[in-house]
Length: 576
Image (cartoon, rainbow, N blue to C red; front, side, top):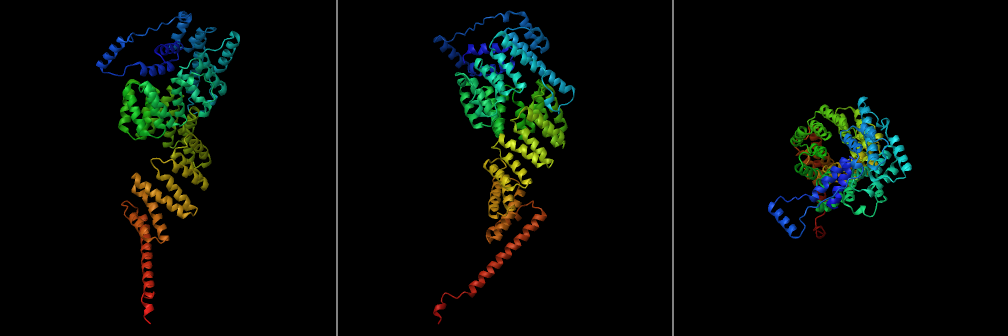
C-alpha cells in the first residue's frame, strides 16, 4: 500500500464520518511511514543518500473536490454528525440521492436508532432485562429505504452504502445477506476496518472464511492479513496468529495494532506473563491510549498485582475519567481489593457509557457471584453471551452459577459450550468432568479429566487427582494408584502446599501395604508423618497405618526366620 492510496483511503473514511476505521488505518500506516530511528546522524545520512538518488522529494498528493465536497448542505450535515446531532443530520439529508449524502443520511439514522434503544433501556432501569424486546426502530425503515433506492435509481450500492446495508441486515438477523453485503463492500473498498470487524462477528467457523467470494487481490492485501489475525484470535487459533503477526511485524515495524493482537492472543491462550509484557510495551509506546488497557487490567487482576493495577487506574482516571475502559480498570481494582459493591458500581458506569461492552457484563457477573446474588449474576452473564457468544467466560460463568445452585444438568449445558470454544483449556474440562461426576456419569467424567490431563495447565495435579478418586470409586485400584502417584509428583514439581500430599501419600502407603511392598509402604507413611501441618485426625490415621505396616513387616520377618529354621541344611544329604 503506497502513501497516496493510504491517505486517499483515510480521506474517504473521514468524509463519511467512519472515524473508528480512519483512526485504525492512520495508526497502521504510521508504523510504515514514520521514521523510527531517532539517531539524527543516520537520518541526515539517509536524506543525503535519497537526495543524491533523486528520492528525497516529498510526494505531492492532489485531491480533486467533487460536487458534494462543494455542497454546503452536505458539509453542514457532516458537521452536525460530528457534534452527535444525528436527527438534524438525517433530516437535513432527507431525499438526497448522491452517494455520500445518502450514506450519511442512512448512517445517522442507524446510529440515532441505536442511541434511542440504549436510552430506553437506561430510562426503564432494566440493565439486567432481556435485550430481545429492545430493538433499533430505524432498522425496518432503513431496509425499505435502501432497497427502494437501489430499485428507483438502478444504482449499484457503493462500498459504504453496502456497509450500512449490512449493519441493517445484521440487526434484522439476516446473517447470510449481511455477509454477502460486507464481502461486496470489502471487494470495492478494503480499508474499512469496521467492515472487517463486522464480518468477523458473523462468521462462526474458520471454514466459512474460505467460502467467501473475495476478489483476487484481497487475500494478498495487508488488510486481509490483519483481519485474519483478528479472526483467528476469536477462534482460538493462537499459534497461527503468532506466526502471522511475526511476519507482519517485519513489514509494519511492530505497529501498535499488531502488538495489540499479539497481546490479546497471549492473554486468551493463558500466557499471562507474555501478555502482561506486551501490554506494558503498548502502554509505554502510547501512555494516553486506552486501547486494550481494560484487558491489561484483567491480566493484572489475575496475576494479583495490586500496586500495578492501582497505578494504571490512577493514571487513567487523571486523563480519561469517563471512558468505558477506565471504569473497567477501576472496577477490577476494587474487585482485587475485595470491595465488590464498588466494583459493581464502576462496571455499571461502564454500561451507562457503552451498553454493548460485553466484558463489563461478564465482570459484573463475577462480582454478583462474590456477593451470592446468583439471579443478578445469571442475567449479567446472559447479556454477556448475547453480546459476545464466542467469549467463553460468560458461558463458564453461567455454568458456575448453576453448579453453585446445585443444578448440574443446567451447568452441564454451559460447560459443554465452554469446551467447544476452548478445547485446549484444562480448567474447563475439569469443570465439565466435575459436573458429570455429580450426576453419577463416571465414564463421561473420566473422559473429561483425561482430556484435561492432555492439556496441562499451571495446576496440572487436579485432573490426576480427580482420575485417581474416580478409578478408586469404581474399584480399579492399580489405575488409581498410578494416578495418585502422578498427582503426588505434580504437587512436588509445582511446589504446592504440603497438605495436598496427605491424600495421595495415605492411599499409596495403604496400596503398597496391601500388595506387601513393605519398604515402599513404610517410606510413603514416613513422608506422610513428616508433613509439619498435618491435622491431628490425619496424624492418628497415619500412625495407625504405620503400626499396621510395621506389624506386617515383623510378621514377615518372623515367617522368614521360621522357614529358614525348618528348612534342611545344605549339608543334610551327607549326614547319613
